[in-house]
Image 1: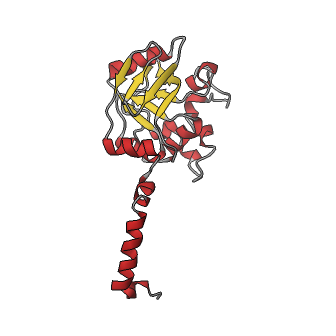
Image 2: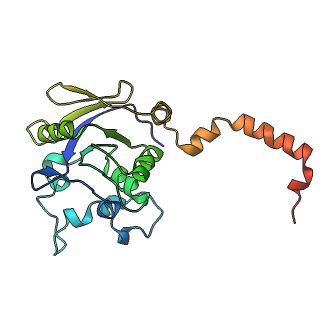
Image 3: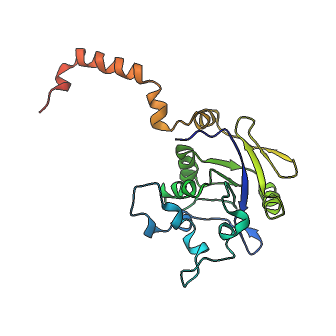
Length: 209
């Protein structure tokens, strides 16, 4: 997993009818027809498929990620309860494949929130009024934001800084690029020592049936 420390990049506001989209579920993030693979590459084609594609299959020019201004956006600003619905891990995979490594919202669904940390995405929770202000700024002439995990801050294009909270263990692992497997492997020497001792004490466990 790639480490996350600081990020400077374009922020794309996920807006519908003048407001940040709330309750964006994982089926909206990546519909079920794109879940036939366990590969993490190529999933961006299904990201927000129903939002970015017109009925005739053509790109929707009004969808934020289809606009030239937000090409290569690394940050997504969304509304409350982002990532609700099913637990599909393809949702953060699709965001990563698009190049998005930070999502800012007033709140996230629990499973999606956990899956973000497992895949190298930083989910930033800020008050709804702050998210609205960030979205307004992202819709202006300058869309470049800075996210610093070490200082736990989001800095807007006009230099205003907002602090966010993050659990210490998750912060440490994300900055080190460690998922759950990587965290376990940090204790590889102790695991090997335990297994060697177990073979001495309970050798019958090693026997093949």
